[in-house]
Length: 419
Image: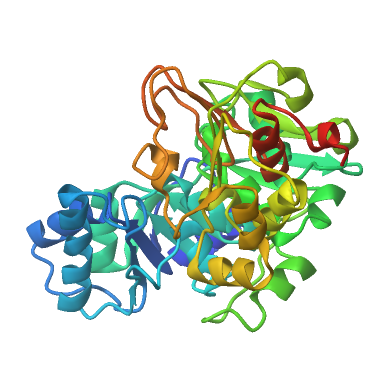
């Protein structure tokens, strides 16, 4: 079996599962946010559930329209707080304690290797970086799982992606996944578990792995997953709130397809409007002028991402025709960035810094685009109207390309700044 099949078998009480099989499995953690939880809560009450299955296994995180941007957002967030109080949920994260959900839960050790995690958010696939099976589901599935602790699944087929070769300078997990999505298309791994492996992945730090698994959904994947190793162990040791288990894939496991990538040939990559799969080397896009840069999100808002961006922008100024918004993904990351002087570097460069929020990524607040405006963002989607006006444009990149572009006033690379 593959690692995905092993985890699903263990959680459904079976010795073996096969792709296409319908199973009922026990979940280790359920997640919902201020957009999706209110629907789940409404459905939970409709089915007449008396209580939640476990008060310590349901995470409610207001992060999309929070801090509450208007009355409607405030009402949505209040539903989460009221439900958490009513059922005495231990994993409710209020403003000041919260962070962007998919950065917060790994940071706090609430998702661990071997877990089966569902979330009413498509980027729940992020936690596969820890060797867990995690996937986005609908709010009604979350409602049922909150009551029963179980969810149904169709066991996905697995597709293997092997990465080898040395990474070029300024290339990281974001470039690898953009290159992959560009290669196979936005439905190239439809309902499949995307298993990332190879010498390049073995050397990739956890923040790069989280970025890659986060964007599995952009290729249509049911999940992204990396077999856990020493890097996983170093990350979860002393952080994990529960016991964890390292699963692996058998040598004779079946994959529907295998793709190989020579990473020494992958440059800093940008996804052009209006699909994540519309990728080109950043260096080819030097004629694209921009109005906004966003560094943050569940894809690239971690401390290492901020360090990389700060390295590029240090001692420089944001182009006068550009606004730059930096959003640390959690309170802890915000504080660490402050202690390291990263926030000073951004402020000195005349960037704005926000409290943790998903904000601009989904066109919510904190950086909406007007008609005709263009943004470079370290986020994960660039569909029509994703960050604002339907006639605006979003280009997806890694943090160093985003920072260099903020200085240049157009899409560019750190090399152009002499780095």
